[in-house]
Every structure is written in structure tokens, then in C-alpha cells.
Image 1 (tube, rainbow, N blue to C red):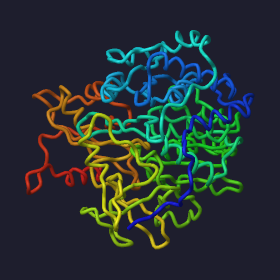
Image 2 (image 1 turned 180 degrees about the horizontal axis):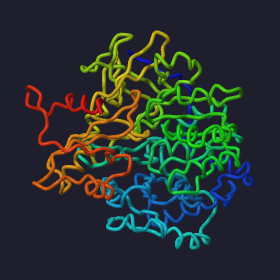
Image 3 (image 1 turned 90 degrees about the vertical axis):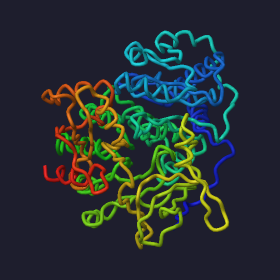
Image 4 (image 1 turned 120 degrees about the vertical axis):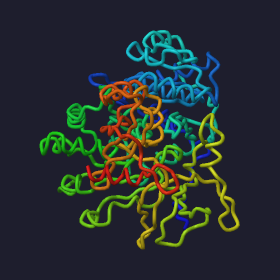
Length: 520
């Protein structure tokens, strides 16, 4: 089963930062971004980014290099992103909410990182890195003497533009690179299909390392609108309300769980603060329509677009505009149809197409296909594969997600074929958490399973065989995990057991443990 996306011509030079530069040339006095009381115009942001790009050039940074950005939300963070792109390099956002040990492990997976930009507040998070670390507060005043015009372009459409991380089954995060042409195609689809323009301001509120955040960061600037930065390291619903209401934010890209917090955090009064939103693009996990229906269906309500995708294929591959809320209670919300220039295949285990209505593995091809996993050719070869379709050989990415095609041509997400789950929109491999637990001094063996509410993953449950003969203290284990895992990957519940139930073939009977989770 093949679902082709609509074919839309793209320019020979599909560069997001060049579109931003054209907006800056045509309207330099328009506000490009805000962060609390700070406001930068398009002209200033472009000039600051150009100076940073020239600085990177003096350091020998070239296409194929990677610049780490370990900064809290700030105008300088955005200028570093744009300047890195203008220099022809790719940026890797390092999430400042993550434990320092996790960040160091992530950096070690990208040997091409040449520099890491930090501030006084984040410098300690990169201690021990082999890459050179630069303090943006000290560097920025020195950039004034560099040219403020754009440097000569050096990247091509297949060059990586950014690198993000996904959870890995061995306990090591996997770095995956997105290409310029894929990112340009995604943002062009957003602008074209939803008529986004200079009034389509947006708010960046998700963690910096999240793939959704790259879309939220650049979509407003690509449309010539204003990007608003939540001036807080952590997600603060009350602060988000204030920014949305005071700045009249029009678009929002976030995980459904963040949208629920905004809608339910302070009741009806909070929902009223969201009246300015024209569009919300929730993605990263299945959306529960009942939790948004009352707000979205009010007169003049916000249009919700359920987007599906993976980090390896530029974040969004299919989309569905929510409309028939009454039907979603029984059918679930579709993940829709392929976006422009992206093709979706539903394949059986032998990589042959399944029949209409049958469940198959969702595979992605076309403009969104990424550059693979950095420093892991084996994993790249397993997931990025050539497949014969008719008389053609097609390069595609095997997502591991299962889906089926409805009679109306809409795709329905069915589940995972492996041990990955989405927690608050962030993909998590259960093996990654199990590896952290079995490396803990208090744990001998561990099996981690998701807990669900209404079919949605709400957290993790860890079944553990304690190490030694001492009493098991989950508080001590949780404290240790906080130093090595991000918050969403730490189990909410620990269940000590003497041993694990086994299946007839001698393997751990995860189904029996899953039944214990569902009964609790």
C-alpha cells in the first residue's frame, strides 16, 4: 500500500535561513522575536546571526561540521541557530533540562561537534566534553567587529541542518540528522496549506532538544512572523498563558500533553487566554480528542492539526485536520495523509505492500527522509533501506510504527512493533531505561513497561530484582536515575520482585507483567 504526497515544486536552493534573510531584507524593523521584555527586530537578528556565522568561518567551521547549542531560551540562542546554518554547519540543540551526564553521553555520539555554545548558567552541563566550549556572554561583545552581511553560502540541499537525539535500546541516545531539503519542505507545507504569514506568530515552549521544538522555533521566522520564547527553562503553564494572551500568539506547536496542561491547568479562565490561537499542531503522541473537543469546537475556535512523524524524517510526515469530534470517541483520531512531497508505505515483514485495510509497518520516503544516524552505520542500514516498488528502487525509513488505511484514505496509528513508547510526546525506548536501571547499584535486573490511561501512555512502571540482600529503597534509585536520565524517562512506580515470570521459551513474560500493570 503506497500513499503518495502531493507533488509541489521546491527551489534549487531549499534553505530555511535564506527565507528568513529575505524577510529581514524586506522588513528589517519588524519584530522577529521576543523573550520576556526583550525584543529583537528582523534586522538585528539577521545581523547578529551573520556575525556569528562569520566568526564560525574564522574558526574553520564548514559544511558537515556540527555546533552544539546548550543555551536556555534567549535571543542569542536563536542567533546561534541561524548563524550556524548560515555558516553551512548543522546545529545540535542540547536540552538544558537534561542531567549533565545524559548531555555528555549525547555529545559523545556526535564526534563531528567542533564547538559548544554555553552560558554561565549552562557551562557546567558540558564539563568533560572533548569539544571546545564557548561562553556566549563573553563571545557576543567581540562579534561587533565582524561583518553584518550574510556570508557566502556553502551548504547544499542534502547537507544536514540539525541533529536531534532519540532514545536507544542499549542505553545510549541515537543522534539523527535532518537535511536542508526536508526541513524546507516541511516549513513550506505549513505555510502553504495553512496560509501562514507575517501575522502567524508562534510560541516556543517545548524543550530545546525535542524535534517539535525545531519546527516551533523556525516556523514563525520562515513565515515572516514573530517568534515568542517562553522565558523559562522549564515549561510553566501560567507563564505560557500570559505570553499567549499578551502577545496574541496565533500558532502553537507542542505535544498533546502540553496542550492538555494549558487547557486544564487553570480551568475555563485559562482556556480563554488561548482564544488568540488560530492553529495548534499537536504531535509526538496520540491525541485524546475528548480532552480538547470542548475548547476546539467553541465558536471561532482553534483549528487543531494532528501531525505524525519521526525525528529521522524531519518531524512531520502526515497530518489530519480535526473536524468530526463526535466520531473520534469511537474511532480515535487519524494521523491523516502524507504532507507535500512525502510518500508513505504500509509494508509487511517481508517489505511487500499490505492490502488496503490491513495493518502494516509505516515507512516513509520522499523529501523528508533524513541523513541517518551519526556514528552508527549499522543502525542506519537496518532502518534506512532500499525497497523495490514495482520497477523502482525506493529509499525509505522503517519507523517501527504500525498503521492501517481506512476506506476514506486516512491513516490510523495502531501501535508499535517494538519496545518504544511516547511519553509526553518524547520517544522513549524501554531498553534505554532498563539499561540505566541494571547499571544501578541497587538493582540486579529490571523490566520496564508503560502504564496507560485510556490507551495513552502516562508513565513507566519498573519491575526490579533488588541487588544484594538489603531492603529495596525506590527513593535512592530514583535519586540516582535523576543524574543520568531526563525526567520523562524515570519510572513513576518501582515494583520489587524476587524474580521474573518466564514464558515457555524461557524469556521474561512481559505480558504477565503487563497484566499486573493494568490491574494496578
